[in-house]
Length: 466
Image (cartoon, rainbow, N blue to C red):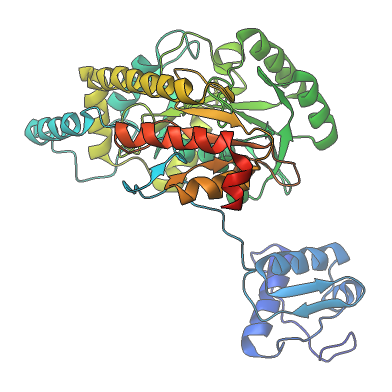
């Protein structure tokens, strides 16, 4: 075992490296060579700092880095030891995307209904193949993706995001990817903080974990984020980004009014807080201005074709704040160079030909019909819904808990998403479930599943006993 007066001495070369990184590498080398065996105790921070000729802060930072990597274990009151592992095991959350199982009425994830877009995409691919443009060999560039970005500008329209040009648009692989890119462009420091709704789509937690950021939930009412709660959270926790879904909030289907948006934008401007508006669940066109139209220098607008046209088209976009598009584009290029050129050309064709708009209109109509069917059968319960939102928020009646209701539904061949899958850490989940109405089953199976859920809701105790 290594004790503070051990003869082990790290061979630290500071050439071309930060001191703490050089020291961390020396310790890694000691572990790899066997000089530091598993279970060995390292010198104290002050002792090693004296030996190597650096500050105690440098040693503490090196120890902290290796502890994060899982190579060292720090035990309060006992010291720092070699762990024998390179990474701590992580508890994995349920995946964001589920395989489609036609035998189950899957109300977990909102999917795009089949309204014939597959054939339209095939036609676009044929047109693309016949165009002989000969640009499907080299990397995509801001020159070769300009048509797709211009098509996105026209798709968004002149009102939604304020003054907009194609150079403000950065393309990504779906809305989730664009949210992560936008966060990467804005988050900084050792302990970044993301503010968001107290109930949030699971992708928010996935993104925060990937970027090693803390997520702080903000209390909501029937218009979304409460301004006073946002101010209090910022004063308590700080924060660099407010990540929010004000138009169609998942899971509650809440819509934030324009007046409320202006209140929140005023707070963000006062605090120097960047807003990232995730609009991915908004499938119907709307004229309500986004945060970027209200606070153009501090707001991103993110959306995609996934929910309204096709989930197979991993095509999303982030509209950067004024004068911030270069930084966002640099993040995207550093991450994946750019969207594949065939995908750019297919999506540009769908948008400019009008096919994407026609598909969206059919998706909106199909969603509205499914919502009406659900409300006709479940409307006697405490359910929040909108015809332009692809899910309902069902508050469970006395006698049910979300977990037991989900289990009872599963026995009936129905999958639902309990509220605890949308709750941030250390917060209490409401007794509710989210029901995505665009589940991939026949209309007959869909209606039967709604009837089964209605029966379950009315008979909690007998169902549980069975």
